[in-house]
Image 1 (cartoon, rainbow, N blue to C red):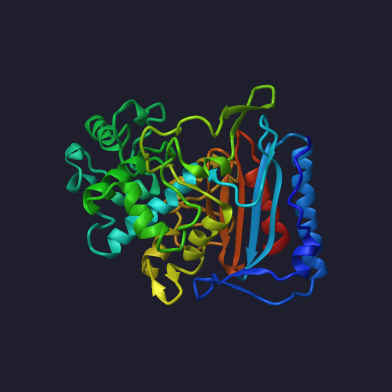
Image 2: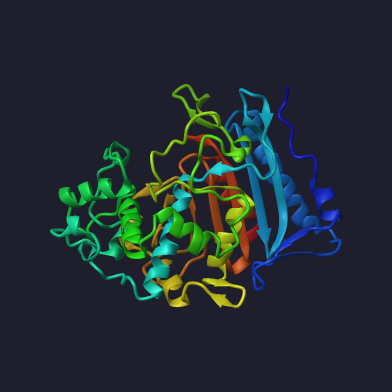
Length: 388
């Protein structure tokens, strides 16, 4: 059996009614009438589809769902390859994915909400909120910019019964290097921020994020922060694969297995679809606004998207990718405070969401093919074709 692409072709999609996400103002959805095909745009989108087809044929990715939204209009939404190769289930539109580290910008948004409400300050020492950090000078700003001095990648939070217990141990151990001198993507910063959110909000961090961030942007249909044994939406989840040394993708997690998380780690843990996550990206593309409501003050949005200079010393698949406050900052950021050309965040299993504000462009490419690089390549190609 071959994994079939979604049956709606580009031309079918453009010559019928297009779904429009009102990302630039109203915060809802609507339908616009029949659109005329732009031949140049159509050619670019066809080329993008052909690129993904080659990846599937060459086994560079097991399966993927991707969405491109420009000026509030879905211009491309396709599914390719397998959702579950072993069960011969093809990828379908609105598959649910583990987005892993794409949880981090959602967490940062929750932190900024608490800052806007006066419950936190970016210059607060962590010790003001977590007693286990009483001997550490680490600040909330340093946690957000990942310059907190903790570089313990081998540290496993799931060796502890809860997020708070893991973070208490981090506080007891203290940072490995002087805070503010090294940039590190080890995840301990997000765990600590999650514990702070729990302490200040007096809620479980996942409940706070679901109620105050995800629900606020309209992610209420296909977004989850916990996977239970009997959840009916398990059948819509994608299996997870890992690239082996030989280059093959091997099954590492199937939808029949238990959750990969002992508890919500704050650095990961959200399950959602590309279209759902687009609603969150739209909040940031619109400078913290949902319709007429300013959820995050624009001053904090601007501050979160300022380059952390230490971040450009660490190479990523994008090259040397600048970092802000739990956001990767795209090409065009050359020095601190210059503003941004694009921003977004990947997830370890191969998902990515990206924003190009000046072109009102949202790019989402979701796969569960860990160890590949097609998600970064997809964003680069879309930006090259549609944003430059």
